[in-house]
Amino acid sequence: MAAKVDKLNIFLSNLAVINVKIHNLHWNVVGPNFFVVHKMTEKLYQMFQLQYDQVAEMMKMQNQMPLVTMAEYLDNTTIEEIEGRDYTDLEVLELLETDCQNIMALAKDIRDEADKKDNFLLANLLEEYLAIYAKKSWMLRAMLEGDPTMDDDDN
Ligand SMILES: [Fe+2]
Image 1: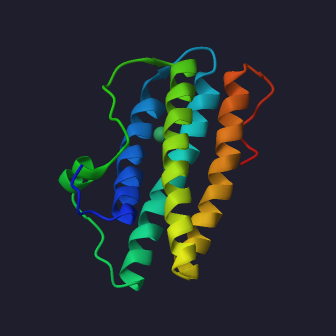
Image 2 (image 1 turned 135 degrees about the horizontal axis):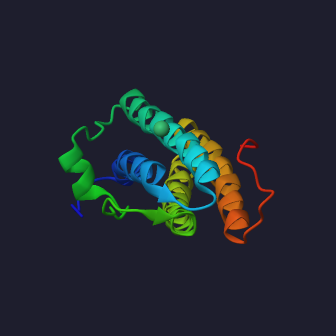
C-alpha cells in the first residue's frame, strides 16, 4: 500500500474494488440459495457504487483529489481480490461478511478522525454508512446461520 495516500482515498479504493468483486460473486454464485444471494449481491453492489460516487464528490467538496484509476485503486485497497470461479452461497456470504467488517473498521476510523476535526459533513456521511453496514452485516450473519426465512427485501 502506498504510504502517502490518505484514509479517505483508501476507502474510495475499497468501494471501487468491492464493486467489481461483488459482481464476480453475483455472477458466479451457485447453490440452492442462488436466487436470494444473486439478488442480495445486486443490491449490495448498487449501494457500494453509489457510495463510491458520494465519497469522491465529498472529497471534491473538501478540496481533496480523489484517486481515479483502477491501477491506483488496486495499489491502495485493503480489499482482497478473488479469482473468477464458482462460489457456493456460503462462501459468498463469508467473503462478504469479511469485507463488510473491513470496510466498517475503516469507515469508523475515518468518522472518528473527521469528528475530532469538526468535519461534520464527512463525519455525518460516514455515520450514515456505518448504520447501513451494521444492518448489512447483521443480515449476512443471520443468513450464515442458515435462517431460510431471511429475505433480502428488507434492506
Ligand atoms: Fe445482474
